[in-house]
Image 1: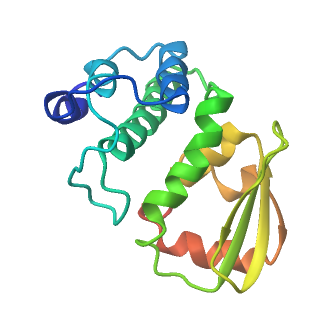
Image 2: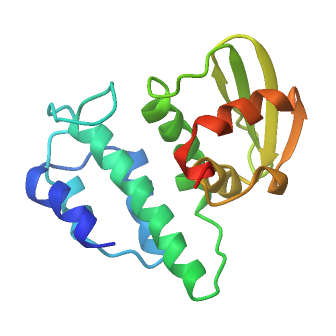
Length: 178
C-alpha cells in the first residue's frame, strides 16, 4: 500500500487543501492509515496542474482526492484480509461516490443511463445522469463506494428501476469483470 503513494509524496508539495480533503485524511487515519500521502496532500497548492490518467480535473487537489480514496479502499482490503469487514467512514464514502464518477465519467463508454446512488445512511443522493433509463442503487455510502470499486456485488445493494442499466454499466468495468 505504501509504495503506491510514493509518487504523490515526491511530486506534491503544498499547504492545506480544504475541509473535504482534511476529512478524507482524518477518515483514512480513523481506519489506521498512516502514509507519506498525508504530508504530500498538505504540501501543495490545490490548483497546481498535474498529469492524470483521467480527463479532468488535472490538478494536485484532484490527485490528492483520488489518492485518498484509493488509500481508504486499499486499507479496507487490508482489514478484510485479516477478517475485518469495516465500514468506510461516512464522509469518505460519500465523497468516494462523487469522486469515482468524476474520474470515470469520460472513461465509461456506456451512454444513455442514469444511476442514482441513494445512501441509506444519508439524506444526500448522488445522480450520474447520462440520459436514458434509470436505476437507483441503495445501500450505505460505504457499500456504494465499495461496489463502485469492485468490492461489493450488485446483489448486496438494493436496485430499483431498470436493472438492465446497471448490468450494461457493470459489463464495462474491469473491477467487476475479473
